[in-house]
Length: 265
Image (cartoon, rainbow, N blue to C red; front, side, top):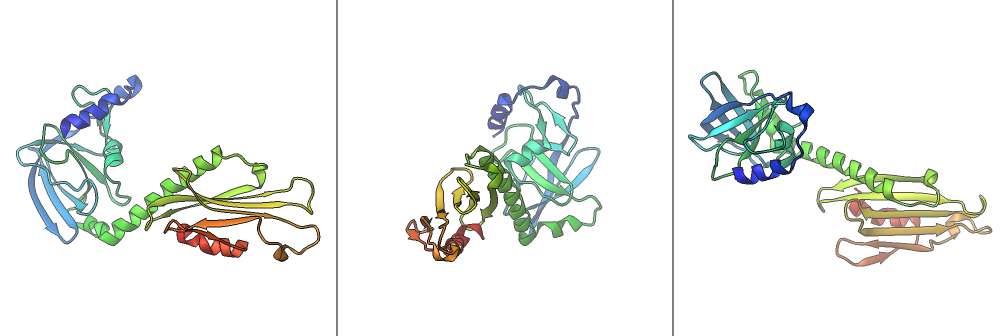
């Protein structure tokens, strides 16, 4: 496992300016482990200090260190080079491959020698000795954190996807994003109004797509009529691909909005 980690770090570019700010980690060893419900308590230490660390057993990075093996302990300030690596090892690097706890002080453990199991761990540090951090690691709390993280990442990806899209008039275009936990997809819904030749003749477009893959899940197009009221004019196109894979035609903007709720709610 350590060799895989080194392989990743070897691909990271070296930064001369950053390298001057090396903050070495503390080397610790496993002492004890206890599991109660979803919370694992891991005790590690060195000759100078002992640490109580907590993690949720259902998240990535909730490891049990191997006995009689050295581990690097990383906090938010730690940055150093693993032997033979070009890039720096940091807490954020560990979080990118495991999980980030939004509450409490995150601590990373990285195997300093070859181990049989996972070489990266992420925990919350017991800062007071009272074990209060355990309350932050209930399954519901972690699930809520994960949902917020996913929605934030989805919003950033949707913005990037929106910026790459072409519109007849970008000033009249907008988007919303939603990460659907059940389907495990990030969706973007775009809407644009376009007035090609005067206020009495205009288009309204709406599309729902996967923000990462660009796959279409819904499309709507409507063109106004110079004589009829807007509610009397059916859409030019209106279709939603349901989770079953079947295409469902629709006859109004309201029906389209109702159908895409399976993705956007």
